[in-house]
Every structure is written in structure tokens, then in C-alpha cells.
Length: 221
Image (cartoon, rainbow, N blue to C red; front, top):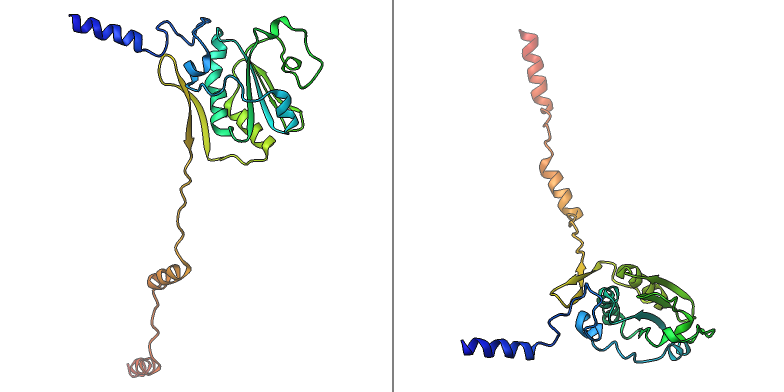
């Protein structure tokens, strides 16, 4: 019995996440990206929106709260974009706790210029500072992936489709499915000719001498 108790205690202390963590509730369980997306590299952002715009980079602004179930649901989607486009775009994920007490900015280099007061909000800004995508709530990964591809000029793999899959109570991931094209090989021209030759049946005409002999016998009769 004591052995079982020690095992249970060890599991509690070694568990990386809180037991009451749940992505379907508005509970605060810690930062949503390492907990619900398995990606702790997104926060804090590696750059600012101002620097990203100055460097002519495509930016993805994500406004969220750690105690929002909708934000938790979007975290693996943002993480998926990070995994695919990390070298080509800047993902700037910001909690709105501080922004709520600020006046809306008039400068397009400031995040508060874009936030509409709701969460989660996902915005894609191209290298020219133009808004290409702006949506609250759950956003379609495929649609954003396509817009980023167009904005960066980097062609995406059209044979791949991506879906968000939950693999346990806490984590979700982006699953990639590749569509394999099946090509039917056409036979070479020489093979077709050879096959046609074999299938052709030729009727041999009788020789002229045989025809004459047959005519002669007919007259005698």
C-alpha cells in the first residue's frame, strides 16, 4: 500500500501541468502556449511589431488571454504557423491585460492600433503594412496559411492539408496530411504497336494458280 501511495505522490509532483487544467474552460492554468500547444518559444515575442514592420516582415498579431477557452483553442493554430513559417514571419502574441487600460493608439506600429477589444483576435499584416487577415475567435488554419504564402511570396505545398488535433486533455497539435497523386503509366509507343500487330488477323488470299484450277474444274462440271 505504501508503495502505491509513494507512486501517486511522485506522479502529482512530477506532473508538468496542473491537474485541473482544461482547455474548454476559462480557468487560468498558466501560459497557454506551452500547456495547450506544447510550444513555449512563442512567448515572449522575439521582436516588436515596430521592428517587424521596419524590417519588411510579414507579421501575425495574436491578442489573447490565458484564462480564455477560445484563446486556448487557438494556441495550437498559432503554434502551427510558427512551426511552418518561423524563418519567414514574425509571430507577436500578446495578452490584452495591459492593453485594456490603454487608449487606442493612432500609430500603426503599435499593437493597440489593431486590437478591437475582443479576444482572441488574429491579424496578418504583410510586408507593406497592409492588413490581409483580421478575425476574432477560431480562425481557419488553411486560410491563414494561404494568406501567409501569398504575402511572403513563398509557395506552399498544395498537396498538404493541416488540421488541429487534440492528443490529450491538455495538448493539441497541427497534423499534416499529404495527398499522394497516383499516376497510371502509359505503355510506350513500340509496345502498343507490337500488341496491335499480334492482335491483327490477316486473311490470306488464294494464289492465282489455285483460282485458275478451281475455275477450270467448274467448267468441266
